[in-house]
Amino acid sequence: MLTKRIVPCLDIKNGRTVKGVNFVDLRDAGDPVVLAKQYADLGADELVFLDIAATLENRKTMHDMVLKVAEQVNIPFTVGGGISSVEDVDDLLHCGADKVSINSSAVKRPDLISELSDKFGSQCVVVAIDAKEVEGEWLVHLAGGTIPTDLNLFEWAKEVEQRGAGEILFTSMNHDGTKAGFANKALAKLSSLVNIPIIASGGAGSIEHFVAVFKEGKADAALAASVFHFGEIPIAELKEALRTENIEVRL
Amino acid sequence: MKLSIVNYGAGNIKSIQFAFQRLGYNAVLTECPEEIIASDKVIFPGVGEASSAMEKLKQSGLDRLIPTLKQPVLGICLGMQLMCQHSEEGDTKGLGIFDVSVKRFSNKVKVPQMGWNIISNLKSGLFKDIKEKEYMYLVHSYYAEPCAEAIATSDYELEYASALENDNFYGVQFHPEKSSKAGAQLLKNFIEL
Image (cartoon, rainbow over all chains, first blue to last red; front, side, top):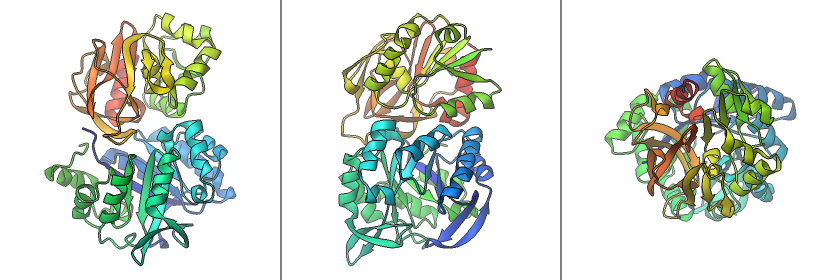
């Protein structure tokens, strides 16, 4: 059986790990390479690095970090933030990233998804979608959730699948930073609409939330940051609990 | 120990080089036939689409070289699939090293299969000190059918061959370079074959 994945997310700014609550108030949680290696040893299934201050000057710092992570870490990892061209992706994959995640750039130019999946294969193309439920409708937001669009989450998800995305990373803006649980209803609907894996993000606060995101939200993977970075939920303990609930995990 | 990685522009080679580096070995990326022939061990990687990958192999004549190699050769992911008879992906004729066809998962399951799955029915020196039902990391939409040359099987929609062996040729559908300690053990076993 394919197992459900536990994915710590490391927000990166100037080569350091940070984690925002509702995307603001950044706190420093250490050296990304050290953290990544520690997570691999603790049983994380995969890692995501999000360059939240993706600027041209910053790009080389990010490449150096990706190279160091690839050198030292023996589990797969995804890199996202500020990726807008085939060349950007080529550079990151050459530094050793397994997958890249694109977000605003895919909304602005959906052809980018097809270009990437044609050139590198859909297995390395993750489309990240930040969405917020506004008056009963899930709307896609851009630029770290700050700019609303009139794009419907579910329609956009179907389009990115059809364009060759290999995976969807869905963050609910309503849940992110609340530690009150994942957007399970929207996640379950997403999972029934598309046939590619869904990574759930936003709202992790307790072990029960992870149980629910897999059972009710039908997610293939669950992503979280602060609950892992600050040791609130130890990964081994989380996985033991999931197994007790008959959820397949790698132990 | 001279380790070569066959270079034909196939995906994430850095991860494989780093995985060997962590074991204390330097793996050289090369497309030079003499250098490949002179290696003790050969890694045949692969990520991407089968027919275009096969096209690249043909352009460099590596499609004729690889089946004639005498030292242990390890195909990884698409590399393994290209060593089979045929792949449904792009209706591609393979190198014919493994007597098995490669088919696509149906839409009853999410495709690609992405993540950690169990490997069972292990039977090869390649799996020395690796336990039955160990977890390995996989990302793939196509699979090799169960066959006589299977040295490991996995389940996703159906049982399929997740590793193959024929004489000096080995193939693994999973990514040992990304499969934590068990993956590192497999690469170590391959070096020590």
